[in-house]
Image 1 (cartoon, rainbow, N blue to C red):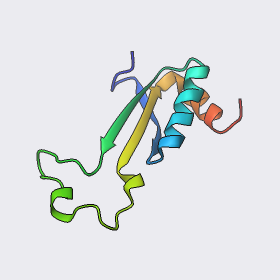
Image 2 (image 1 turned 30 degrees about the vertical axis):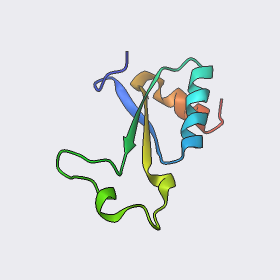
Image 3 (image 1 turned 90 degrees about the horizontal axis):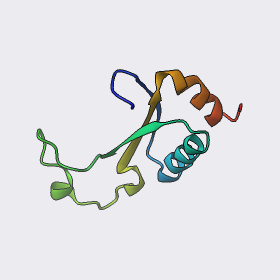
Length: 87
């Protein structure tokens, strides 16, 4: 089980294809991971969100979602090596 105490951040990306490739790579090598997806335009307790005020005209919607992938600390070095093509 991956918890906040035993995990390390492996990747932050806005690219859906990139996060999919990394997740597939980790699965193929049996490295457990956790992913957090953040909608950067959604409302929060401190803000009503900007979409209601500004709409989406002229915005790069490909950067709307942020993907954070975490692995266990003991798997971090191996996961980095896999991502860099060294394994």
